[in-house]
Image (cartoon, rainbow, N blue to C red; front, top):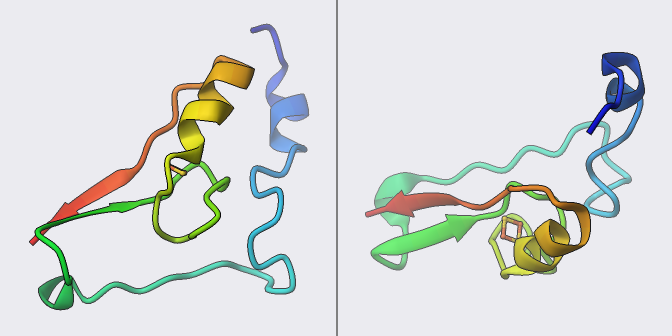
Length: 74
Ligand code: FES
């Protein structure tokens, strides 16, 4: 890809999640995780944000990107 830094910086990465907020912040108390392994979305395409629902796979195939979840282990 040959995008300039200026062009990349002007593109919003969040297409639809909590757009009514100035900043999306989620807090997880790690000791209270319900499952031994929980995946959190970093691609901003999940229908269950902040949890990963696998939407990054479709995004990566469509764009050539390489994003994936943050995995938290209990
Ligand atoms: Fe966003 Fe998996 S759905 S990282």
